[in-house]
Image (cartoon, rainbow, N blue to C red; front, side):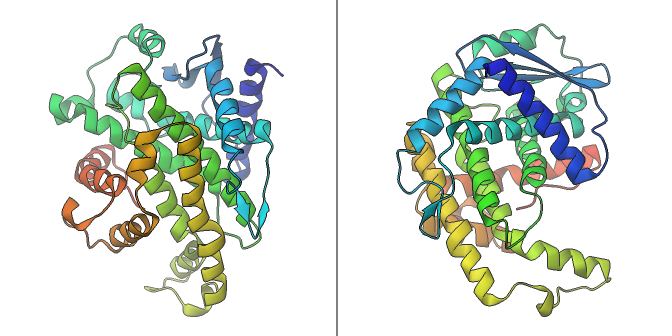
Length: 337
């Protein structure tokens, strides 16, 4: 199957996934153009009331190459002593579905209206050239001042990640741990490659958070997913606190930690090594520090970056005040781990 056909298939899967989750069709029309370019990049632009995506064939080949290299690591995607999958084409397809959900989230969250134009993933000259053809209108982001533009764009990327991650991971089920591991790894593969390509292009990741920050947000979501059904039930019943009997057993939550959450960090490190993305591996840091920071951020006890240990947690904390201001301007809630 050609790269263009695989991207078409991924878009179809992404749209059907949204229908499955939301139980209604995806309203905006999505038009996909595929550019024959070996570099890894994507551009999302408004298209009337719809969305126009231009994605390079290099996104497909880059993901194939990454998964081929990553599966040389015997520890990747192992659960209960067995490898969940070693299907390169399948993992690339799941990664593509996440990328498309991420681009769709930019449209759903009205990021084009906020920035006055389109958005690129990976800052290659080709992607920037395509985007520059579209006039950039005066927009609400300008109210934040020129000095905050880059940080604001990083906030928007985290918002789109958050939306796409919620769609892709869906809810918690103790029968779906394999699925959570596969989908989390697929997400991290995209994040790692975007950072590597940004660094290679000399854009220095100015409009994107570091991959370590994006992975920190992802694993923070994954770490709390097991408690979401109980929280939802408490809200439905009008309770101020979660009932103990609605939570998974201690044995189940401990198994979830050891089979899903902690190994997901190992998957992130394996993908960073396979991509030769040294900055990602370095900024992920020690797993004990990483998960300690997740706890600190989720508890809301971090007041300054000095209260945190890892680069990803520190960047997320630094962006939170600006993100809250952006969300207030847009009438939405702020970032949450």
